Each structure stands twice: as structure tokens, then as C-alpha cells.
Image 1: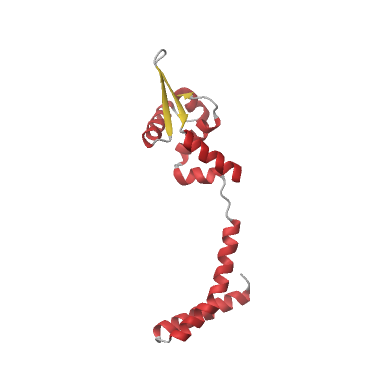
Image 2 (image 1 turned 30 degrees about the horizontal axis):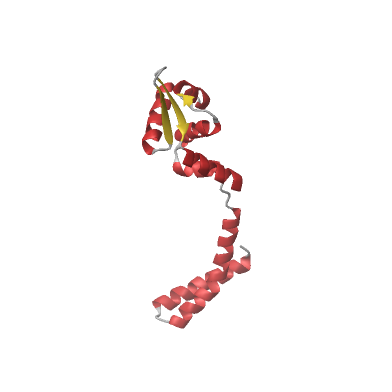
Length: 139
């Protein structure tokens, strides 16, 4: 925002305040008319700069450790065992297990139980994978 825009914004705000406290509606409207263009220009520049990468989307939904688990499951083409998730994310097995249970309770991770080997495998919810891939394509 250039110096002239700051000046217009300052005087516009002063006119708005004067109009509100002085019960002067035309002064209030004039203040809005003067102060609004610099604000809109600043807001438009800020929205153009905003970048929505897939990592940003995941950060909005999950905390840091959960995000690491989700990213490991998204990148894997097949369901992963607990030890594989722990190895990929660098977390302990106890922490990975706790996070997988928490994510499964929230519906972000699905559990595949293998009766023959009594091993649980974890995979990402297909809807979440679809959301991640949509964000990746648009970025």
C-alpha cells in the first residue's frame, strides 16, 4: 500500500469516526467511500498471494504427528502394518499405534484385519485420499 493509500485510509477512518460520534450520516458515508478502496486493494493482494498446498490443507485438519502418519499412508500404494508406519514416520510404535487408533476413531484411517496372520494393516480413507489428490492437482 503506497503512501497515498495510507493517507486516504487515515482520513477515511477519521471521517467514519467523526460521522459516528457526531451523528453525521453523510460524513460517515464519505469516510467509507474514501477508506474502502485502499482496504479492498490490500485484501485482493493478500488473497492473490495465498497458496493452498496439500501440506497446508493437512495442517488445518491434523496436528504435526498425525499429519506425518497421514502422509505416510497417502504415499503408500498398499495398506501398511504398524511397524511400517512407525518406520516411515520416525515415531515409536506406541505413538504410531496411539495416533492410528485416534485417526481410525475419527474415520481418517481404516483398519484392514487379516484373520490368518492376525495382523492389522492401516490405509487412508478413500475420501481423504481423493481430497488430497484434488488439492495436489490444483496446486
